[in-house]
Length: 101
Image (tube, rainbow, N blue to C red):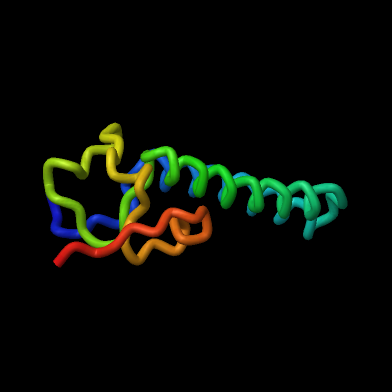
């Protein structure tokens, strides 16, 4: 396994899939299917919200690289309820975790 840990989570894959569907619908809107633009933009907003909710539920990851044992797709982050240090999504939700040095 590589040393990179770039969002290989349930939240990341779900958000990516929904974003791709929204972009596809918006693309159809550009070439002539008028409701597609608005439908696509709505699905992309939904993708952001669903990804954020899944992250807060523990199916995302904190910023930075996780330990190798915690990198599996189906592994839930037990520390998500308290918030992640330096995480914008957690801060927006009101979860303020402090970094332990």
